[in-house]
Length: 131
Image (cartoon, rainbow, N blue to C red):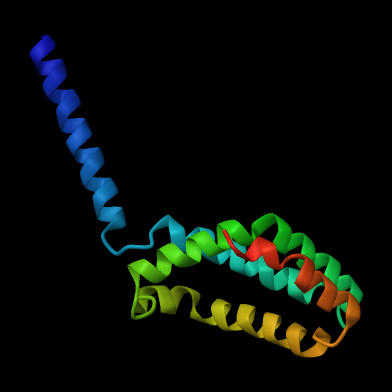
């Protein structure tokens, strides 16, 4: 009976490993989901405050202070896994969201780059950019 129990345990372990390896075969796996969650939260921080650059400075500064290290870590992992860019299935799933997130950041940078409060926040949180 003990041998059968051990054998069943080994089979369960092999099946679990196979499922885990299959889930990771495309690369990215949970990293892309975690990255997109952070990227979308980043876009929300840049969108906060409407046209008020002081409000945006607070929102973006808070996000950068709390999340930049993890964001950069995930970004580095994904860039290493996908040196030629994300696979087609990832682009299909997240492409529109990636574009919208990038637009939110660029629009705010263009609108607020000359605002003293926003510029100060960018300088103050620059150290958070290096993991």
